[in-house]
Length: 464
Image (spheres, rainbow, N blue to C red):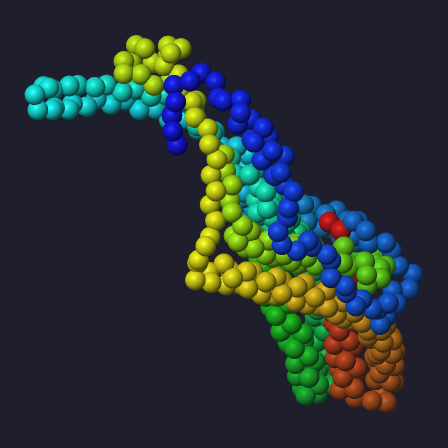
């Protein structure tokens, strides 16, 4: 680059410069993105029936427990996975700015000061000073669209990171709702156990009185005591499950392990409707599918970045400033300097490096395509599985409640027959044991219905 002591650039170069600027951006290397066709089923195997719209509703609020609402808000605010995902979004946003900056002229400055001495035979020695202060400009013209494709890829990566954050949030909300419902369900199981213990303690007290009066044998007292102790073993088992679940929920909330506040009892929760939707809706609703598509868009754009290496990179440079032998004269008008120029840089022989890079990016694009297709198919399966599980869990719970009703009749009739002296107390104990197990199973199955519904909302990409 030459430096000339002139005040203005030659006007003869301006038409050429304008032509170059107008030609920039006219070509775009690489394939343009087109969404792949997806073979979506027309409907799910199980129809939701009278369904509620999922849209972006806060579906967990439909359980009707303000404590659950607060727990979800706390988790969204404090959960470490959500915070990590948010930071990844900020990272990719910054990377977009880095890549996009290449589309604009880069302006910098330079300055120098020097002193040198030279000696020539017969001419003596000479001391020279040099001072320079200047602005320099560089601009790569994105004629082939390399920078635009790179920006497109980075922007898609940013959107994929954002959809990844939404996926984390969807999983988190579902996990909090599931854990809280299970916690209330365990509370109910514990209450059933304590009720059974109280009943058997009273039976043991009565039998001990009857044994002292010689009405019943020691064998019957031992049998009643055995059933009491059997019920008591359920208490530490259930309390252990509660404590572990509270610790797990605490971590989801971004807190240290500890107790979790409760709102309503399990029986007081409202069971929301099954969300409506058709399979094709998942392509826009599920954040993991949207993330997979953005990754495909990014991989597609990187093919263009790789192909652009075959074409010359054209850049413009310029400099304007002041140079002088004396510091006091540096800013004088006759000390100004300027220069401008253009550069061309391209490959002639690279040993197959560019071709290999293109093949690699094309393979990466095909991988992203398969990943997108796999994400779509997985989503369809998860929704179908969730709907099937929800339907069958409800059927199981209904059957369990019918069995529970029958066992209550059985226990009542067994007690009546014992009071009439027709059967031994062993039959009463057997009926009560089976009733206790059925009450616990009923509570567990009703809890499974709520968990299955949460999984339906999660699979359908429920709002948050």
